[in-house]
Amino acid sequence: MTDAIFIALQLFLAAVGVYQFVFSLFGLIKRKKKQHFEPNKSFAVLVAAHNEEQVVGALMENLKQLNYPKDLYDVFVICDNCTDRTAEIVRAHGMNACVRTNQNLRGKGYAIEWMLKELWAMPRQYDAVVMFDADNLADPNFLIEMNNDLSSGARVIQGYIDTKNPEDSWITASYGVSYWYINRLWQLSRSNLNMANFLGGTGMCFETNLLKEMGWGATSLVEDLEFTMRSVMRGVYPKFNYDAKVFDEKPLTFKASARQRLRWMQGHFTVARRYFFPLLWRAIKERSLVKLDLALYGVNVYIVLLTFLLTAVIWIDNSFFDGPNIANLYGYLPLWLSFTAIAANVFTFMIAMLLEKVKYKKVYLYLVLFPIYLLSWYPITVYAFFTQNNKQWSHTEHTRVVRLEEVQSKQG
Image (tube, rainbow, N blue to C red):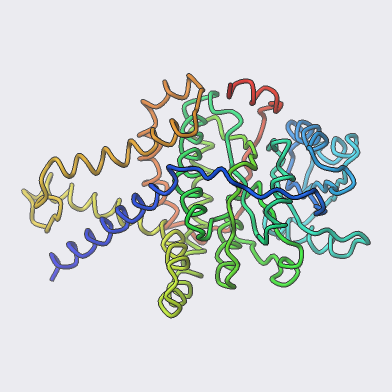
């Protein structure tokens, strides 16, 4: 009976791995034909900020230079429980500083929910709401791309999240590699198949009427994933815009990275518990591959946990108990097949970098440490499982002041 359970679990994990790999192949090709529209959509650009005096000025300068009619967008910076000069800097740039103070309901999700209520009460109403983080930089054509998608019927849109500081350390390089992979072989593949994409926390655009219908309601530690689940449950599938780039600052140190990823995993466990089974049931009932795909993405945190625990049990059995005493599916497979599977997963990251024409020389040198970053997800996920009820928001400090021109010049 125990052997049957272990074999079933291994078969399940193998099937998920093959499924994800096959899906990634649809991201190899980028469609070139796009429909363009005259700029006519109005945007409220929201920026979530908590003590961001070091970086918010660069973003304000950046947003002034967007290639979009200035009378069609306004910038609102949510100065959430700030104790520094964030609001002062925002006002000095002629932007709207919206000060929020609430020590009990802390975090980006609550700040956005508060800001949307403020926005709905304003005399001017906008066609859509765009969300950035204070450490971001947006491509000059970002709003043009959002306008095109909204005019084509999209209601929720995710832009391409790139990294503005991939050469700062091996950690930022690892983030960069991960995001190039996600954008090209996860997001673009699903976009090519007209499936639901998932939101990434920044560079997001929402149709105003949809937000008013649904309410924000995403106040977990991963508000982006939570809203993705809620919108797909309603039959609204987020779209991915490959050409709408936003550059995000990544943590410089392993400690800061681990703390950020721990928060993400804690939030993922919460969202998986809340939405996996309802979404899976709808996928079965409606025979919807789109909902099944998103259900699997939502429960991926448990898949990572299960992979780690299963691998650990098999390794301990073989190392300390004169194993194998536990059925190991991979022990019955040819050795070349196992190595091929491992190589395929590793090379997908390299393929993504080549497809994205990554020209950062240091990043290629840092690749030797990339496996450490990947393996570190396992202990972080295990710790997150046991601390998933911790709802305290942990702020990631941003200090890297980079201008868009510098990012673009390094990209070649």
